[in-house]
Length: 498
Image (tube, rainbow, N blue to C red; front, top):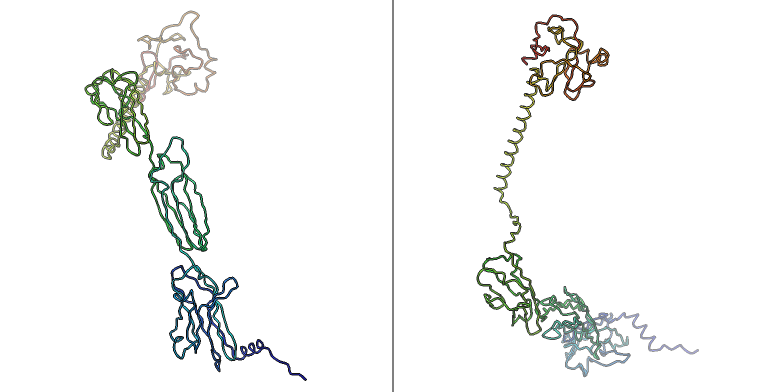
């Protein structure tokens, strides 16, 4: 029968399995425009080795192959256009008369964006056939970054309209950049991307604010992020604005005959103020005034003629603004409250010591007065001064247990209110008198059980304020330690000499 035949492809596969040749390459490589990059290609031969007939480098782009370089043992090395000036074999042995083709790495110089593609390294061998591998080459383009002010001069207008003050551009980058802004300004940013024909991208961002006096001299920073790199650029805004005017010098205390007063027109402006004009509303400036630059000097003492409303007009190239102050004159100075000043530590300590001493003396004085009053009241009580205390002997008993020695007396005794002779008893007559009965004393039986007790004025219970009633039994003898008083009472010697 007919013998089966083998195709060339099947034969090549069998040869590859038998010999085990292979082509080693990197899966991908990259480089920046203008730089140099190596594309490695190494043939791993078998044992026994196969014969290398030719090595061909090809560019694969959009499914189309283009020869780049060829190395042939018999014909030598050839680099085709448009790569001839920029591509070469790395190993010199490839160019020898008897070349070594196991390492056919090529070098790209002055890399261009158009070089980005897939590159095939193909080995033609005998009897194993063709062996190849592929590497992807990526080309990056570093962008050109710049930041500029939109106009050299930014003017703040009264209409407060938004305007672009700065622009940040990252041009012809691959891949595209990312732009951000860093500033204290209260504005907003706009962004725009443009794709160029060579595959690069240009990114543009504008920063928009309302120009004002507050935006003058503010820093504005553009931050461009390209891959893992950060590029920053900054500008300081130069905003021109009309003057902001205020008048200083009047402190509300201009009084008659006060010397050396003045008014100064202060203006914040960009560019600086070139013209200052002073005037007085509803009148002319006083005759004793002298104008120097932006200041009014009033010669001589203050008079009522200086009163009025003063106006200062300040002008620069952007516009004019006005400042106003009302000046009034008083007859006498208005002394403001003293400004608190920091007290030195030594003075503070001395003041604290003096205050403590004065407080101590005051406390001692109060204590002495209270002691004197206490002793005085005690002395007057023991000597029988009934204006302070009235001594009462209930049931006729004395402190020592004896009875007072005195002639029979009326039962009702009265002590006149303001009499110097208050210790002398007077008999009560008429209906106004008060007579204490045994029932009254029995009512106070608890008090009567005590041989001696005192009654404060105003604290008597059933007694009139100035009338005390006594009941006496027959006269007993006076104890040895008791002393009889002129008013009929008796006081213990111990009490007398306490």
